[in-house]
Image 1 (cartoon, helix red, strand yellow):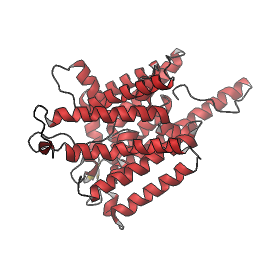
Image 2 (tube, rainbow, N blue to C red):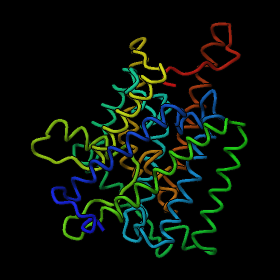
Image 3 (cartoon, rainbow, N blue to C red):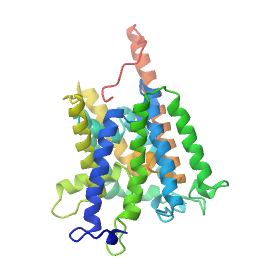
Image 4 (cartoon, rainbow, N blue to C red):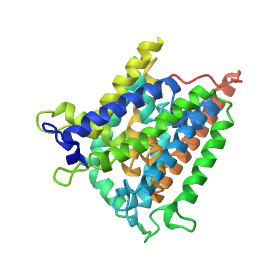
Length: 361
């Protein structure tokens, strides 16, 4: 469709960067205001409120994406999410690592990117290390390990999507959306917050349609993608270092937009504040989490946004497996940390009765 828009001095690959920048600004601002974060929805002190935001966004993302598919605007038949061979070991291990990492770093990749723009130096450091670890896993020292794990597969045949199961795509889309709405409604969150979360969720199908239909060009194609943070973080790091040798893409525009949007929102709402690490032990914990998220995000095929918020609406079996394993990794790691803290406090006599807000929240 891109050639019909009549741009004279702008190619599709150039246009997609500006498009991603706009999507990123909107995501960054909305995520900062709503405190959008999958980790908080699972193990945060305010998990019910956080879950209402995340699942309200998911409900809209699912319905919007499947509506675009039904209208014939986009199709995921050839997308990597629909690979006939499911790399179950890489996805499962990657999901567990990412889930553990986001608990150790006290924030998922998207949340920490947003926090990094609000003066949180812990988050900025984590995102930088996360990007390095992701790039190392995709194209560097750990790439052979990624390839080896990815070759351990099970055939899915035609069942690469939930849409291939009895009932079809709309049945599963409606089921996911209905469950998400119930979870969102249980928290008694303000309608304004849920409304902003819904707008955030609408960015997912907008990005899919933008890259897969509006900016589609047979002669100068762009990647068919939506919101994600693992590959975009790696691409942004690579472009920042070697900008004269590589061109920016959707991911670079997205990360830049998220940082700009979150910064603007924090300044306008008076929530910008400089924060840093408290001690060496905390620094080590955060950096460990960053590495686990970087490696895990690549193995799993995306982060909680790429494989979760944007991946699940495609009804991909691989994406569903990834987000389930991320949740399992996060819950298991949180349980271990709680038991460790309980033993330590028990040995010292006093035992905490309430859970304090974590620094990255």
